[in-house]
Image 1: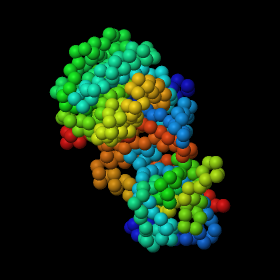
Image 2: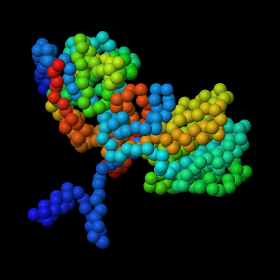
Image 3: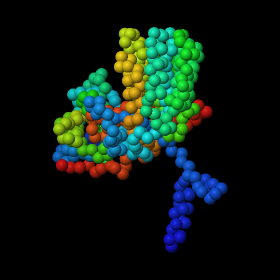
Length: 151
Length: 304
């Protein structure tokens, strides 16, 4: 089931890139934690599974769009995504880039994981059920989800 | 028609909430939401304190989940304080203890306390801690002559005792703070450092520390004091800065800052790690307690 989700996600991204659409997308950060930094990998290497992990701690953001949930890891420990409800993300070569408010600085991220949103939500429910807790999707900002933009 | 819609509205409200009828015809609405209170201070990249902040400027990361919507948000300046000053009188700090006690007494009597503020002083050293004065020390004469000096250092036990004292004194809106004047080297406690930290976090009490051994080069206790203060949203001051100045800075810090509340998000763990983070400006720095426990769930788990 997971594999099918991955295949669909890969096809979706490939189609988007091929058609020149979705060079940017809008989404909402729903999770944030510190994790190991990754370097020299992005979309393509994330897909191939070749991840280079460093010992530094970098911010890891879970970004929810209308169809896909991305897990993005900062290229550097100080990379920052504004936590506003609607944030625009730009896909540039192998990086996802966020232009900060003053437009003088950019944050660069590698994609650690991509999951179809439906599958991600199902996984969360399963995970919570396994641990015997009630999961409430209130924390996912359904009303704030934005349509994928095309530029 | 209006009457009918009003009746329908009331029925709907009663169906969705727990109403308890009171004898005089009033109603109490009960809610089972568990609310989290987080007091925090904000500073810019240069460490200058920020006194004006809006809810849209901050978010809370609660067990990795982002909280943007708060039930309340505002400055803390008007709420009364419950301060417990913990003075280490154990053998390791006997050299300067008389001077420290005199400075504490002077601070308590001269500081700019407000109506409703409560100050207590507790000394610890040896097998038994002693309450020097309780509640309204700023209006009492403090007798320091009977304090036993010397013995071992039950620092963590003393912090827990101070929290008990603060909770005894506490009123509905007050904020608790523990000021520890010690070298930070515990030699005797029954409780662990983690227990003391968790108890302070649960009591929403900030721990501040004045390291009374900072000049001696013995830094064994420094990491303990740093951990205790960082985990609870407080600050550690090196003694070299001066106890009197540090005490004033602590009172000033307690008067500043913000208080926000939010609904505790569902989590797999009863222990919640929290961080206040900026929404738009990555250069903002926030200081707050770093965790809390969902007591209801923790107690349920114990029963099971």
